[in-house]
Amino acid sequence: MINHYNFKNQRLSFDIPKIMGIVNVTPDSFSDGGKYFSVNDAVDHGLKLIDEGASIIDIGGESTRPGSDPVLEDEELRRTIPVIKKLTQLRKDAIISIDTTKSEVARQALNSGAQIINDISGLTFDNGMIDVAKQYDAGVVIMHIQGNPKTMQQNPFYKDVIKEVYDYLSVQITKTKENNVNKLFVDPGIGFGKRIEDNFTLIKNLEKFQSLGYPVLIGLSKKSFIGKILGIEADEREVGTVILETISVLKSARIIRTHNVKYCMQMVKLVSHIL
Image (cartoon, rainbow, N blue to C red; front, side, top):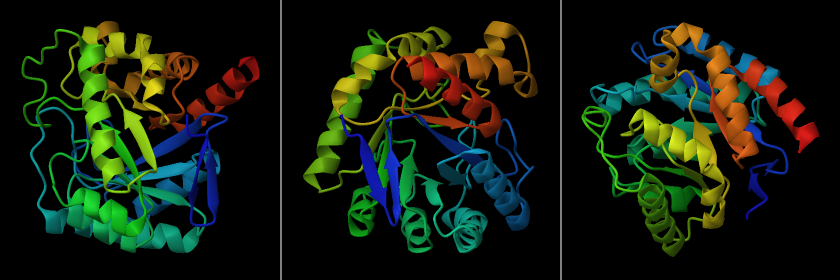
């Protein structure tokens, strides 16, 4: 499996799991919508996450919670690009990821200092995304999704969730490699068109995705399946999140995308000593 990537002057090694801190520049994300909607608030939060130990800051301007409506391209650009520019000015060595499915948003983000495209569609919503990734030699998170954010939780179904997700990721990896895009991460897409049992099955079998040959990224922070099992709201899901993030690291995850970098960093330090 790939053990490191080089981004600008930064070497991102996967010997120890790395943390991707979430900065949602949105009014309606399920966990922190509206908290960091201004440029200054979003930048301050990104700086805080870096100081707490995040190796990557994932900036998004469009909520992808179940049932969410798409955001117009111009609005997504207005939300994200100033944050990326200011954050990279203040921390020139920061590794920034743009969470988008739109190739023009990705292009302007990369031109402004981002180095990774985090595409929940696995590069399937916008045919221009691969070309943008190739042009900028960007890292790409290839995620699995069934449907789209608006419809994905309307009776999702799998005969064999592990095989179907694995095969989807394998096909998309082949497409990106054929276009000379090689800095890849694979994400099984917890909560994106998945039933509760599908999410747990994917976490339980996460190590199987190692054979795809690329670092496994997982994002499950505060998601609704945790709340449904425990009967709690989003702001009470920190403990459940850390427990499942711990299991994910033990099951081979190399990148943890999370809201609470501080807690996740403590977990990674402890688990790394065990491993």
